Image 1 (tube, helix red, strand yellow):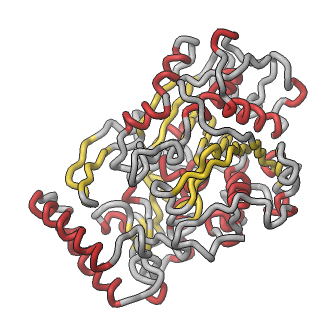
Image 2 (image 1 turned 30 degrees about the horizontal axis):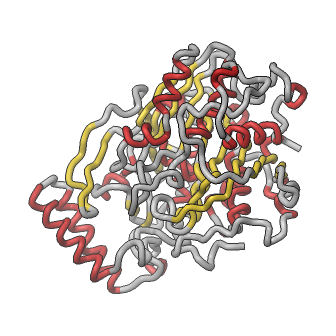
Length: 488
């Protein structure tokens, strides 16, 4: 059985994450490189990450010995390793909670220790993401404890670079972006990649679809996705890195059902407005913005499109008026957290295509914008933070789910398929996973769904994924636009 068909799930009942960064392990494991003075305290998260690598069989002949190097088959001395946690926002949409919104720093620290061992004194680590444009980077770093982690490794000879991949921070008020602050962005810059006929959107070419991206400039989005051209601006730090380690959060998502590895690559882009999020209109009109075509929706679009064109002029008076009008519009057309709009439902046929395109760019893209072959894919590892996940209105407005799991594997598709099943979702009803198994000249996985084998300390889960019984899941509640459509 190939390694990419194996997914580890370690379940460890725990009430909370460790509190104090840099999150040292609770005990001095034989392979631990930093001495007994840097251990102690309650840290079940570290043990969960360590055991997930053991379950995967990494360097199994040396497990329990000082020389155990579980990530040695993925990370080599001298490598540049890009680590991408989920850093979407500094807090929940409606309150100051954050531990079920973003990856916890204790998971990052545990992974870093084994990267440190594998690099063997030579190499570099970059930790980065592109949060939501209105998120506060400093608050994210503080809450994750990444500065303390960075300082700890600096004193041990390993450089860790913390990179906010965004080039702009948007100031939002009353649902309207009223100002933009220029950011440094990726120090290595970005690159335009054109997937052309290899894009998942290519099968829709010629249908006259009008895409909405992430900002008021609708024309910009459609210039980059038309006439057989499907272009994305992607940050070069993850592209140039030898190894990409994704540390996502186990969460539901309003536009594609769940967000783990495949969806999280939105965070490596260099221009969010080049990312199609939905097609204007309802299904009867060839769109997926709404769940049905209605006169109310057409009126809303007419008003919104005109308003966005006005807002593009960067007029302060127009922005003030838009803030007041948006409040009234929600009363007339319904709040986004209560009604289906903006592609927030199971019929969204756009976001999953964009996400799979980004995954192909990451896995096969060269820094000059070209693509290499299937045999030369980027080395990859996933460690999923499912200690406290999120269900309901994900990815930033849902409810906490304390489940105490860490999942790991070296294939983003098989790990996401395992996550979906664990959450109680049917992968065949999630296009972002179902279509990721497509035969393609840039295949995202060499595995077939029937090949996925779970290794777990939970007896009922330790089997082929297709052998799980229906009641062997965590029964996550989907986003309201997905209820009744994605469950097993």
